[in-house]
Image (cartoon, helix red, strand yellow):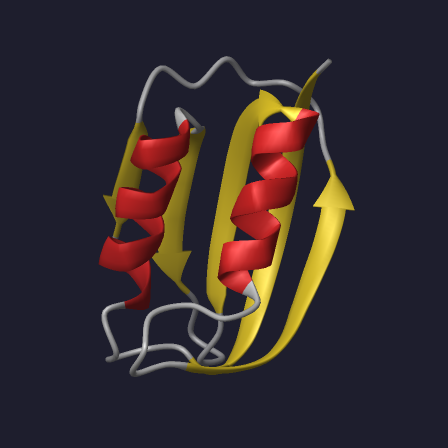
Length: 90
């Protein structure tokens, strides 16, 4: 089943290549959406794909790239937007 989720990732996740690594993982999995840094130091992700693929992305987000230190991943269901690619936003 196709699904839309949003994730708020907190911890040491900015300035450690989290966004670029998240895009690479999403592209590897075939997930569409975006990732961006937030003013509060978190990383925000919106993602759309099959539930199983999204579960794999969530698992990756809880670890992140080697230089990151993830404290928490908040997950919310959302409304399908029909993203066509996965991009890094500023």
